[in-house]
Amino acid sequence: WPSDLEDLFLPLVNINVAETMLFARHVTQSLVDAGLLPLGSSVELPTEECWEIAARGQVGWQYPWGDEFDQALCNADQVLGKTSRVFTFSPRGDSIFGCSDMAGNVREWTSSKVPPSASWRGEVIGERGSLEHFSATDRYVIRGGSYSYDSDCVRTWVRNTQVAARRDPQTGFRLLIC
Image 1 (cartoon, one colour):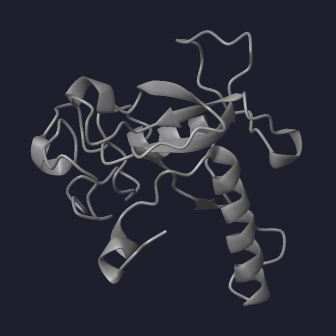
Image 2 (spheres, rainbow, N blue to C red):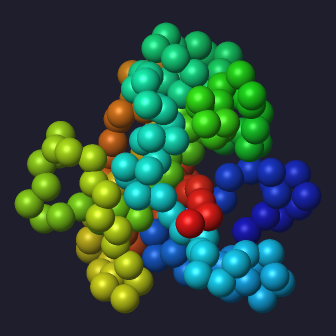
């Protein structure tokens, strides 16, 4: 967790997918209790499908801002050599929906559990995994690339998977309100 005020603006990393789901539940309950989130709504990890739409938009761009890589619009290709503060490249590097940091900085967990029979290059996965059916050996889709990825690997359609229990200094998450 953040050690000083400066760290509060960095993405939270070294967290596994189950911990992100628990955090989302806690945020949901806290917002409902405070009257800031209507009953029936929730804060969740996006599915891979939702993540990709937020990053590419309906036009299907290669990068959140368009089809050409621009090193000035994201933290990738070892530009900074470490994670950067959230919104550092906003608004110019944002997606058409105003989502920031969708390319580079840190890879992001999705709630999409990879079925054992899934092809690596198969269709985008919209099915959610859950804490109730969690296994540390399940694989989940991660998206967005990280600061160490080159320009090809931070394209909006690039996917990776990671074992659910793994914590990694280049993997974090984003939440959405449903």
